[in-house]
Image (cartoon, rainbow over all chains, first blue to last red; front, side):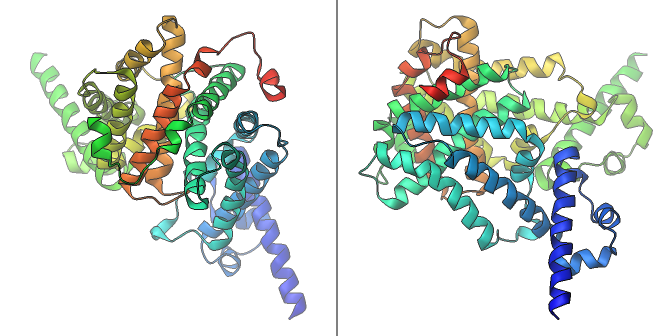
Length: 212
Length: 212
């Protein structure tokens, strides 16, 4: 039984390694169970003994990508909250640019059959966002934990948008250093104009926002 | 010859209509030339007489999506630049939420074989961004036309990031009105902290940004 478990664990790691290599070199759409089985040298059915569905395998690769992103962000030393936010954004851009395919797969992947994301994946997302919550909490100490968590995801999303459309070169083609300047300026503007973030008030409706 | 041209134009429109329906109901990955030919009632090869490659058909659908986005944004009356920017962002969120699949296809689609985007598509993108450049130019009148154009795309990208990750419910699941509040607050913060946008200086390198 112990040997069976061990073989299972080894095969699992080899499948994740192989999927990660495919995603990194050819992108998520190129990932096919049949090719994986061939590369790892197992039967097609064996993959589904290890991973109940291919989504879980993709998420295991995603978990590694999230962990390396988190490590890159954690590495940004706490100094002064606005500088820290800028550094986090630039580190995010750097990692995304260096590992474009794996980073892209993290966002392109959608769970089939509307399965929810597993808890272990969501927890790794939380650890990533905790890095953004830290300087944001220092900038806006009056926010409660829930509001800070939501706002950290919003600021992350804004940064992600600038990085994603910038790296895809869809809307404007900028050299990476110029994209970094645009990103840094955007984050600084958000941080400098943070009084507007404070003002998020549940009493104010979207309809009011459009009128006022 | 005239009748041939006419039939060609009619078929072209019918193919775009059919592709648009498929994308709107099932998403971009469901778009297959074989199904289109069947729905429109033409031979598979005929599609490629009208559209040299399927990318062009997808871009024709994208052009309509861009045009409806632009129309929705243009509709936001010019009043006061910060309010206008907030209104533009909220209108963008509204259109994206209402036409999720078509809007998503606009960003998911990638040209095969690294073909460049055709000029007519890029021009429609420009018309869309012109809506953002207008209030941004009012807020930052000292920016030259090129800097304003780039900054408009950056601000658009930040808005797009909040809208995209919010609607995908990947990172945080917020009801649409709360997402609208987060978006409005982010845009207001960027606009309020615009001195940081002014400071984009080509002398300052990304390396300096991380140190300072």
